[in-house]
Image (cartoon, rainbow, N blue to C red; front, top):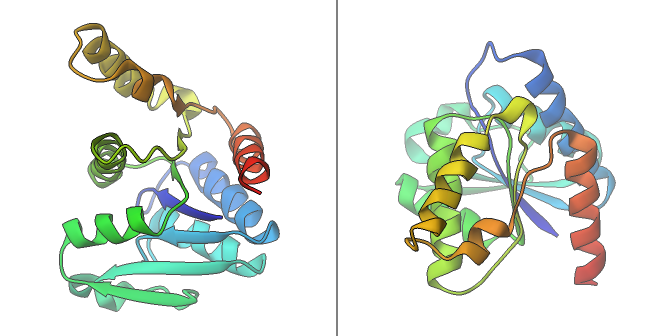
Length: 181
């Protein structure tokens, strides 16, 4: 299974988020899955990629040409892109499931793009937001409010999984992978 992981490229992040990224990457690699991510050797992106690689997994990096100097050496495959729009599209096309770890504007943008694409093209794929310490609760509350106002399809919002720790997250991914066989 190809798992797109969206997460922060920033440094100085709370160590609990680093451990979350490491645990997810280790699970991806140890279970024969492929990581699809932003391709950089920065922040949580670097952590999840290194853990995936160290555990024997394939790592597909979708690297913006403007950030090629930060391209991660653990990437098994590098796909060069010129725009963030192209980066998101390639990640979406190459993913069977989506996971958001802790992140900022870019992570939110990627999650919303995946959600919009899946809704528009009626191609639902699993979407999980690691909701450590309620990080994504306000986003889910907003989406539920939008569903209550009939601005979005409630089934889409209800389909987003909100695991609160890496064990719940990897358990959900394992169930998805088992059902896909």
